[in-house]
Each structure stands twice: as structure tokens, then as C-alpha cells.
Amino acid sequence: MIGQILGVTLLAALAGCTSQPQRGDGLEASLLAEIEKIKAIDNHGHPLKVVGEGEKADEEYDALTFEEMEPAPPPMRIRDDNPEYIEAWKLFYGYPHNDMSGPHVKDLVARKQELMREKGDGYPAWILDQLGIETLLANRVAMGKGLQPPRFRWVSYVDALMLPFPDEASKGENPDYRSFYKAQERLLRRYMEESAVKSLPATLEEYEKQIVTATLERQKQQGVVAVKFEAAYLRALDFARVERAGAATVYARYARGGQL
View 1 (cartoon, rainbow, N blue to C red):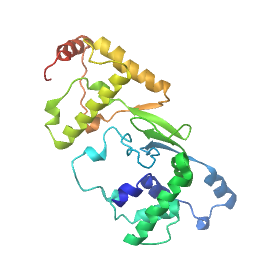
View 2 (view 1 turned 30 degrees about the vertical axis):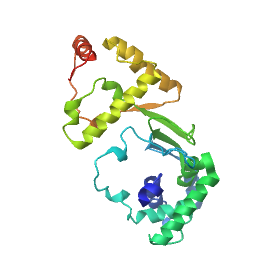
View 3 (view 1 turned 90 degrees about the vertical axis):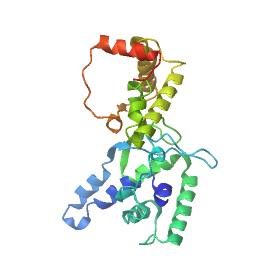
């Protein structure tokens, strides 16, 4: 798909391409020059790390990836035939055409690949430069090549820490839940391995200390500036207040096995 091949930060580019002040709008030239020096902070992005030839594609750009969702028509603005892409291609790659014909797009892909090889690990930061973005808050499972601070700041995912037990009932509610909950189980296993914990602790207190706190402290040391919850993709948001003693009892029961 064209959108998958060329989609890195293109949506951000679309916004940047459509809102630039024009010098004929009555702005003082000196004022406009100062405004154009102001860099933006993008508070939500999923930048892709730099991947070399023969390396595995980046799968850590989100805790819930498109590849695992049920097939569905994409939203209008990220469809392959969205003409707004053309303006982004012009900005990034000097695209000389006003159409999306096959031969033209083939040349565009070749130009992008050439530019990525030329920029190397600096390619993601170069993209930010074209958009006038100083800092991007990168919502990712883990960072990677080309995504270093201060240009990229890590926002980690923590829903998995709230889901210590498999939830087969929720998986059965709809196809997306089935893939989403599997993704959370996989992420929790990763956090447990990184915390050197082989199996779920027997008590809630131990779970909090050995996995939850250990994960958050480790991520903070690695540069995390915020954490992200995707609970709205996983369940209704009517969270009930639960006394700690009751939560500890439920945890202790299901830590030994069985279905919620």
C-alpha cells in the first residue's frame, strides 16, 4: 500500500502543509520571520525507528498495531488515494507532479529510499525539521535507532500492568478485543522478563513491587517522560472504586489460575 510505504509522519505533514501563513495576508515581514522561527511540540506521534536493509520491520510503534486488527476500510485521510498526500510528498521529497499515477509514485518511492539511505539514523529528525517540529512525544513500546532525545521523547504503554490475568471473556466480545488483549498479554510478558520475574507473584503487593513499580522505575531511568493508557480500546471506562483488601483477595485467587 502506498500509505504504508510512504506513511511515516505524512499525517503530521498534511496539517503543516495546509496552515502556513502567506506573505500576502498583511503580516509584517519581520513579524512573520519571527513566527516562522518558532518550533512546534508534537504531543502525540508514533514515529518509526530506522530499519536497515534485511532487518525486521518496526513493530514497536504502538502497543496495539494495525497489523493485528481485523481488516476494515481505513479512515478517509489515510487511504492510499487521499490527494492530500501529494502536498506532503512535495514537502518531503520534492515531488514534481500533481497526480498519483503508478510510474510517478514508483519514482517517489525510489527517491524516498535514496533519501533514507543518505540520512541514515538522522532521517526521523530530518522529517521533524521539514515540519518545523522541535520535539515529538513518541508513543511507542520501546525506542530505537534514530529516535533519540531531545528531538524524540518516549511515552510508554502501561495498560498491560493493569491486566495481570488472561481475560478470555473480553476476547470473545468482538474481534478487535481478541487481538488487543493478546497484545496486552504479550506486553506484560515482556515487562515481566525485563523485570526478571518468571511467573506472576502470589500476592497483589508483590505484583505491584516486582512488576508494576519495577517497570515504571526502569522506564523512567530509560527516559520515559509520560505513560499512556489505551483502556478506551479495551473496555468501558466506568472503573469502579475497589477497596484494596478486596482487590488483594481477587488477585490472590486468580494468581493461582482459573478464569475471571
